[in-house]
Image (cartoon, rainbow, N blue to C red; front, side, top):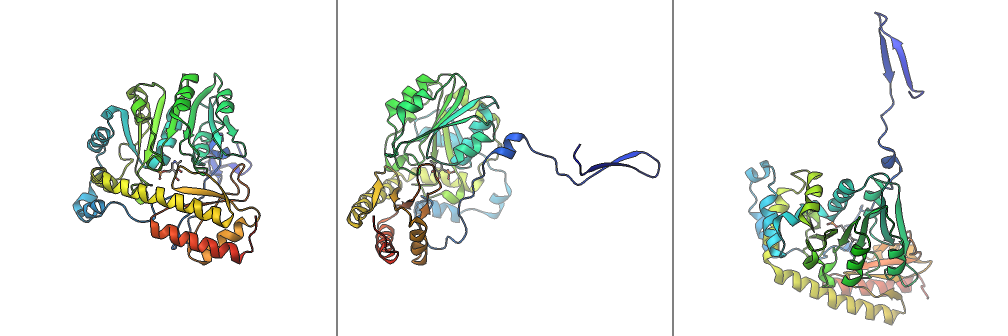
Length: 375
Ligand SMILES: Cc1ncc(COP(=O)(O)O)c(C=O)c1O
């Protein structure tokens, strides 16, 4: 009983508990970190969240216009769309779960897999939601820090696997570094930890081109996540896909709500999947823009990490916050990554369509000059 809880007696002399104390959650919830991305005031050129900077396929917009008032009154039906998505990616329907973005996929995998004594394993820096969702279940999160190259620390990562390791999450390409992990290394990690689920996050697959989809079902402990928030331009609809061995997927499906993905997203996904040409066009815009951005940074004398995703991580140094503010004043948002482990002084810029890269580079040149930046 807490000090704010009192037991009094009512008129009949019966005991009555009077309390103004809110019950506590599980200890893991008290101790887990929170993720508060800087979302306010994003009415500018958004080069801060690695979204598509332009639009989804025009076919999706057409489909959205056909949504009826009655359609909105219905609970969403996920299964039919799961069959379509599975066929599109060469998978079986029971190997696929559609989720409320990859964020939810991570959350569901952690909820389904991790006991409080289990260990989760990630390398840092990486996507912060891995830490949030795994710590929701267990205090035992092992982080293997990359060295100054920010490449994936493969040998140290393998060495950090223990018999208690139950979940391993690797993003390839990784956020915020843009570094990748080869298929051979990812499969070696799966083999080194047969007791653990290995979740490979392919959120940025379209800007790199290597995938483990062909290994889904064959490698029993492998899960692969894909998002429709990036190349497909559907971040606001919240839809992602998790694929894996059917038996493993059954456990993850069990902890998911049947209505986790909204019907508007489910209506749009099959249409988005028919327009591969659009996604290929957007990825080509990003890949050309990324090369242009890296050339531009070289010309400005700014060091950066070679990226395989739709963003580039730059080494700015002590003026990182000043640069972000100067860019914002020019209507361009960047993401300060200085608080990420090993990223002090680093700022990330998203690569979008050609015009947005041009604007980003021009603003960068002016802003670096304005703040008197020097290496
Ligand atoms: C590596 C990685 N995974 C997942 C996500 C989130 O994807 P979604 O929008 O599908 O939740 C992000 C978003 O930035 C990311 O960087």
